[in-house]
Image (tube, rainbow, N blue to C red):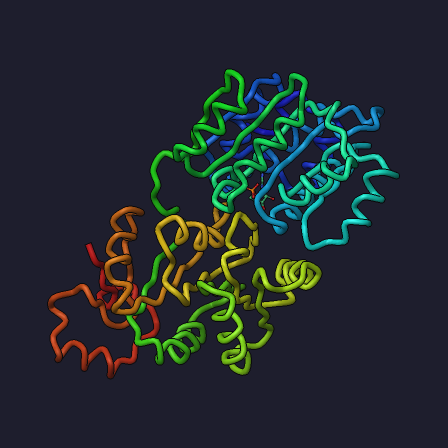
Length: 401
Ligand code: AMP
């Protein structure tokens, strides 16, 4: 369905056209009538589905710009998502008088307070910690909030914000609409939904926890000491647009950056230990294409939308299937093709088996397939001679089933 078939105000349609949004994504089509009608919503949806605009469009429509008060409240788990959400609202609202604003930790609170006190804000996007600070400071009034959105609710709870969220929601004393979006529905999310939503409409746009078909999954069984050389060789044989390289810890990001920067041009790194200004500037540079390679800890994996990532590299094997999906979901977005390349060590094999079973992944080995019993010493010698760090589409690819 096209946006032009909805009864949207001309100024919003104009903004959507400018953004290149013509067709609604499935989540937008499914949720628009519910959100517009004012009903509570509990939606199972993943990042990359277009859920930000799904909320932002009807929310902007509902806001009365003549009323100088916060009318929409959006809670997100990380600062990066906060800025990304804010940027999407800003674009959709660019042709209207609706003013969004984002508050998150790591940014000067005095500036945020001044903005909230002196200027109009109609939609507030926030991370829970900073929002609670501002609530304690008596800066905010939720008396006019019509709609509250809990985005990436499973991630919000994973970082331990359950009490925070319940406290924030308890500060909206009057009847209002609440929308909850989550990629998974564990018991604590069900409880949160039960506590915060009134007679919600349930929508699920995740049929199976399978990996998207737009991503090809490559794996390399490597000794840790070989990883550096193997990664450089793999990337040299690929047509690369932008590459995100994930490590499991901050110090690993630092170490890898120091060792690999001489081999890869236009590279930077990002993790939660960097000050907010630095993180924001790196994200801007990566989005605008000034950086080709970004080494990151999982802060960058949570819901961030980098549309030109052609390759995601798991330098460290992900903790579980969910983390693998979050990381690799940074590529192959909105109909584009993407490649995931994961290093597997001997120690990772049990997790690897679990991953391909649970996510229904057909792995393609670059080099030796450690699960293939027919990997004779002769095969291994041949593989070594071929030094094949290029994926081999026909007979060379080994699929593990
Ligand atoms: P999200 O799931 O909200 O992070 O959105 C993922 C990506 O889809 C973002 O780059 C959006 O700009 C893009 N997007 C959202 N809705 C549409 C649409 N209807 N048409 C084209 N792109 C869209």
